[in-house]
Length: 167
Image 1 (cartoon, one colour):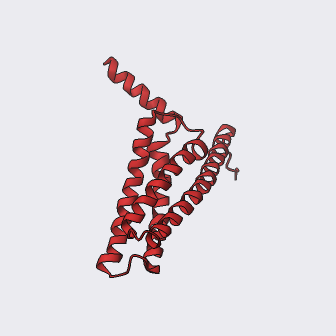
Image 2 (spheres, helix red, strand yellow):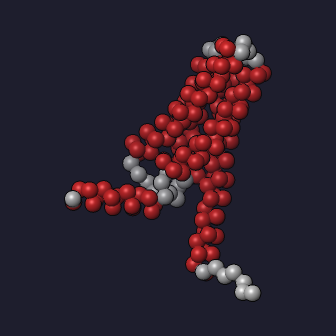
Image 3 (cartoon, rainbow, N blue to C red):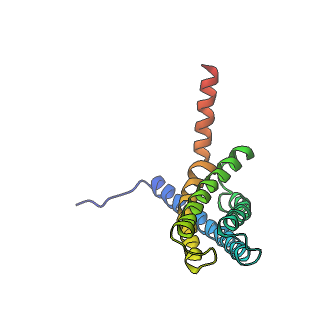
């Protein structure tokens, strides 16, 4: 029986890919933890301080934490990825975060208005935490897929555009 052998270059690529993924996850986690603290702190302060209500507070806290997260992710988590235009990156980044905000707002509205929990209730706070956690998984995938592109995808996209222009 022969042992399964890997091509040395394949092994190096897998090891390099794994290291990059760990680096992205770790940096995404650090940026995310800071954005999370900002989001939760503002949400709590706005719902208990100026009494804006949970939905307005969520919109404001998300806008502030998303802006912080964009710069942290662009310059820390995904700094090694290809740079595309700032307009493209920010529109995709904020669009993805708008999707997660809408889902969060709908879930919060369900608990507040349909199920009768108060804006300042512990249940609404916990539901907010749960929507952030689910949104985080979606955002990590979406950022890698649509916002901060792998250099190979950028080069392939540019080659496709060049072909279309010459045809």
